[in-house]
Amino acid sequence: MRTRESLGGMALLAPTLLLLLGLVLYPFCYAIWLAFSDKTVGSPGQYVGLRNFIYVLSWPQFSAAVTNTIVFTVCAVAIKFVLGMAVALVLNQRIRARNFFRAFLLLPWVMPAFVVYLVWRWLYDPLAGLINYALLDIGVIASPIAFLSDRSTAMGSVVVAHAWRNFPFYAISFLAGMQTISQELYDSAQVDGASRIRQFRHITLPGLYHIIGVVLLLTTIQTANAFEPIYLLTGGGPSDATMVYTMLVYVMGIMNLRLGEAAAVSTLFLPLLVGLVLVVTMLLQKKANA
Image (cartoon, helix red, strand yellow):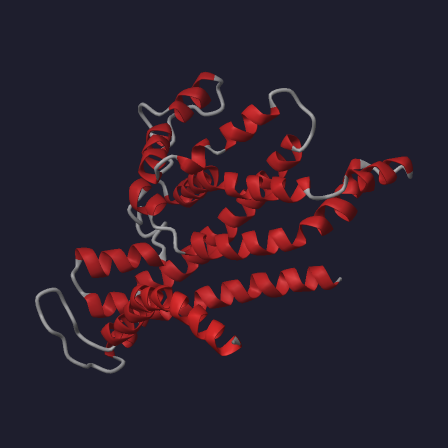
């Protein structure tokens, strides 16, 4: 009987497994093959060994992409975490129109990415942008700032725009976790004279560890692979100041039609992405076991 049930279960899972193999495993293996070939658009490509990897590693844009990807990922995840946690704490209180604000919170996240980033591009515009207009009006700056064209501000501007669009996922996830924490714990802590900060440290955070772990893991991968904010806001410029690895793959594979070298870049960044995930996992496990 159990054998029949097991076979029935495998039969039901088989279509999904085959679909996953076709959508994940085949493209992955094909990308690995491309990385060891001189494949370009219009040519079949031949095996060239490690030539693509040697060339990519000697390219200055690659080292810039490594640094920029790490900076972009760490800064964006940190901002989204802090902002999401702060908003979740506010919306977890008994305030007026709480349900309205909870629904309104999702607006940046559900809007199409190209719409969000084109709006931010207008906000950052040195001539017609709202941010420059406001800063000039209150006297904070004496002349307009080219946020997306200046090396010193380009990365920060992209990080802010990306964090604004994606922090609602953090806020909603943390808020859902806070709803599961018993109110009696807070009442007891308040009777014992615990401050809001101590309640947050000893009740809220421990109650959210598992949710924080899942959210950070998923969003670290998603942020490291972000393409839309860079492509729509800066295109990797100015002077490679925002050239992350996804943009580098696009430039080499789509614009220059050098598929083998683009695949080599993707393959070389795989250990970096795995390393980021492992670092986040170890930090969370260390905190949970403390």
